[in-house]
Picture (cartoon, helix red, strand yellow):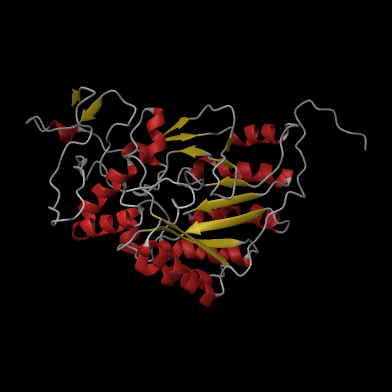
Length: 386
């Protein structure tokens, strides 16, 4: 291993296919970690975060020292945050508060827009994001304390909007189930987004909450192609298991949404109609989609993955992405960041609308209520006589 100065390249170059005349030029790519060390992971590299003063690069010094490096194993550290509810004022999303039981996500989805958040921890948005995880075991207790505050005004809490609450470590941690138990007792509404069939474990709580219009679930089905899913989302539930989860949730009376997310032009956009049809057959009544987002480090991680797995589509996909992002790799402007702009983005939106209309999706939107909210009793608080 060697250290480079802060002005050194954080993305050492590898050869990319030459671009045709007039095509947009792309920056150089980062060096990938050996396949055996990252087996079962989504990202191919582990470049330093954007806030680091130094970059560390693994290189072979002629003594085969790289062969001695261990594979990336999942580790879980404790997140000691004193609050669990995160607030936001983004005008283009339907919630102003959320909970993330975990930082980092073992699902390893290469396109995950949450990857750059690991840079705030001094870690890489690459392989560190999916192997060095942080859990909040006291999240249920912190949540109950925040809900008990006299200043708290109930509104829907979103869970899974950053990292997945049902990623593999939830099997042992059971933090998400504890959070649901608190929300159920308090009569507080919750909306959940996940890629995991593990959500069916909590059907008993979710069905009870759904009867009072307190819960709804959205499951993202990116593709029905098992090979593409395995490559792009290595540790997430398989597409058939996600569809089966939607069926079980729907049969339990829980409002469900199938999300075609993210839509990646020239890679999975041809599956929009098939995914919606499969969701409708699973009993889903609502659907949504989100265009691929490539903020900060995600751009280079996705580009590296694309070069390794679909090099023949590399230039075409990024040309289409730029056509939908005003000539850039990503446009973070509110109102357009989820759907994009331009003819290609319009066509994707129209195809989605037509398919939903044919399948009878989105005719009615489920609405959650705060009418059942009962503020939890704080520790030591005297009970009322009446």
